[in-house]
Each structure stands twice: as C-alpha cells, then as structure tokens.
Amino acid sequence: MTSTTGTAVETTVEIATGTGWVTICPYDRLTPGRGVAALIEGEQVAVFRTRAGELYALGNRDPFSGAYVMSRGIVGRRGEVPIVTSPMYQQAFDLRTGECLDEATTPDGTPAALPTWRVRARS
Image 1 (cartoon, rainbow, N blue to C red):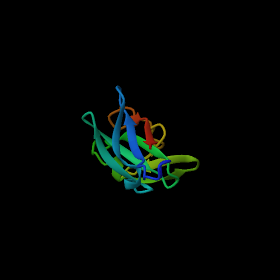
Image 2 (cartoon, one colour):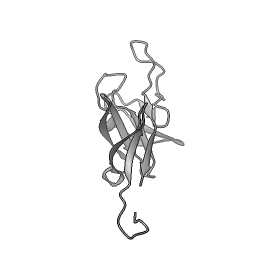
Image 3 (cartoon, rainbow, N blue to C red):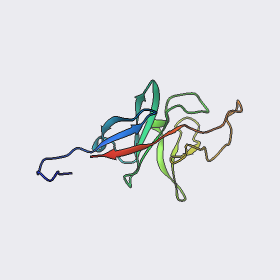
Image 4 (cartoon, helix red, strand yellow):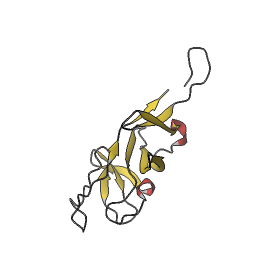
C-alpha cells in the first residue's frame, strides 16, 4: 500500500483487548492459509489469514487435548464456514465463532469452543 505522499504504508494486524488494540505483526508476514501464535496479555492467541485474505483470532489451546497447537491447524472451509482443523484430534472449529463443528463438549464435559478476539488489518 502507498500513501498519498508516495511512501509505502505498512498494513498491520491488530487484536482487540479489553482496553484497546494490540499490534501483532505486518499483514504481509501472515502466510495465507496458515496461522501464527501470539501472546496477548498472557494468553496464547492463534491468528489466521485465509487464502481470501480474511483475518481471524481464536484461542491457541485445543480444548480436547489441552495442547497449545491451534495455530498449527489446517485452515479450510466446510461448506460456507471457514474452519481450522485441530492438528491433535482433527475436530473442526468455526473461525468466526470458535465453535467446534464436530462435538458439543469435550470428554470432561466442558463446552468445546475456542475463545475469539476481534482482529483487523490497519494501515
């Protein structure tokens, strides 16, 4: 992106916290179809850029295994729903809501959903 003065303007990815926005990285550093992990206020967040350029941010902890691996998941679609598939036990999670599309609860009875954050690209 170029500004009106002809200088390059970097687009950054930001995540909303309870008190404002935190810069994660330059937008171009996110590989389409992949995720990265970021530490936001002591919590691991998985940030994804889809091949269509959409951004999503979910908790990085797989609720079924307890492992912090969601940023390593496979990004794709299930019908019209953008998803990430856990690399541990292969459950699919809706990137928009964090909801697990395969099972409503984990084996210990807790809801099988990932927390979500608002995310944006800003120039």
